[in-house]
Amino acid sequence: MNLSGQSILVTGATGAIGQAICRALVADGANVVVHYSRNQAAAEALVRALNGRGSCIQADLAALEGPATLWDRAIGIAGKLTGLVNNAGIRSEVSVDASMDEWQQVWAREMRVNFLAAVDLSKLAIGHFRRHCGGRIINIASRAGQRGYASSSMAYGASKAALINLTKSIAQSHGHEGVTAVALAPGWVRTDMAGAYIAEHGEAAALAGIPVGRLAEPDEIGELVSFAFRPWQVSLNGAVLDMNGGSYLR
Image (cartoon, rainbow, N blue to C red; front, side):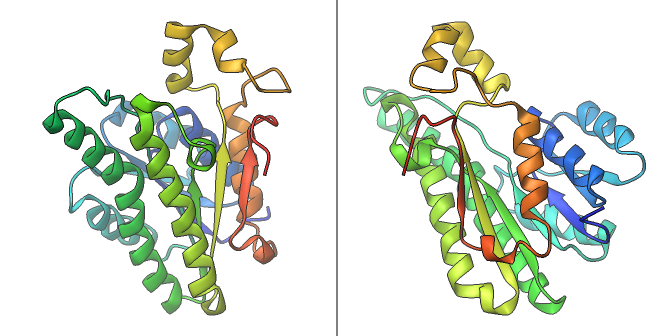
């Protein structure tokens, strides 16, 4: 039980990756606060499967006040948090030929949910962790934030690149206070997002350029997040852990 005594908030926890993260953290001894935006039934089902080690909270991270509301409710439930997983994310498409209004709306929402919500939650987490002997932030970024992305989804790639930079900035600025940060950068993971792409373009298109010849499974993400939360893995501070099957090498 490597995470015994830890209480960790996981955003976007009803998706495949979020559920896998919560299961892995609980299996390793942690308690989790499950965040959801709309899918209450999935959140409640996940909590029931966590055998008394989880609770759920609704919050809209697209709203300006959403992150602070979520954090306050999580503290109200947990009393003290030792970790934060910024996992919530969306991927929208907008053509460079779209109207300026549509272009700006997509970019604003993408950055709000994928990046600025994580910024606000990280601010609150840093203050909390300073008062409670440290803590760890894990940001779920993407391969797209490192190598660039398709024209129609540039907002997604840019938001994930910003999330990686946020991770490094927290690591450099607050590591000496016991506040550490790690980013994970997966390639394609077998989720609904990948399923939608495969349905449109075929699995061969998703697998193109992945030397191992398969998509990552959500449980792989969950296992690595749990590992990164182990208290003695402090030297991972500032790391960006690639999980892309060899499709992007640095």
